[in-house]
Image (cartoon, rainbow, N blue to C red; front, side, top):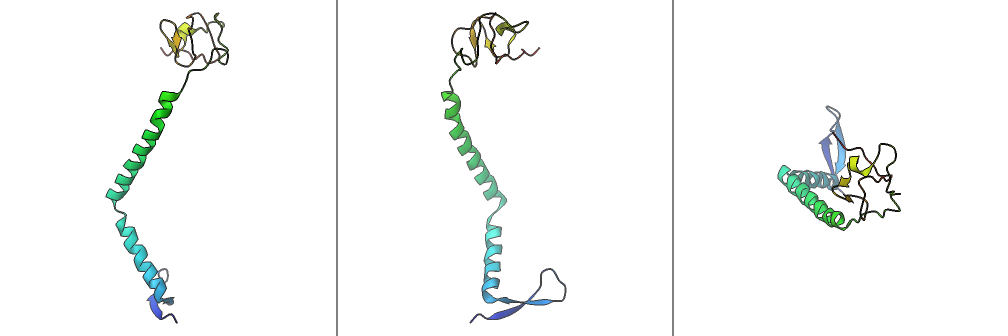
Length: 117
């Protein structure tokens, strides 16, 4: 049989509520566990998570391949004033950061982005 302990109610002044010995012990353990979670522990765990996330994402960047010219709808002629030479993705003299193969400076594809500046 559980022993009943009289304890002040947390939300009401002057009132006393009945709680079991087990509830008192659970409350004490909960407070001890909360104190064990220090700022240092939080910072160390956060840094470990960030390092793990960065490590898991690093190989993905290296493994990413360029898109085929056909998928990017690449053409060797410009579309109006849009052409590879004034695209932010174009790499001199004849390459693109996203499209595979040799790229003409006068070409165009659906991934065209105006060069800044």
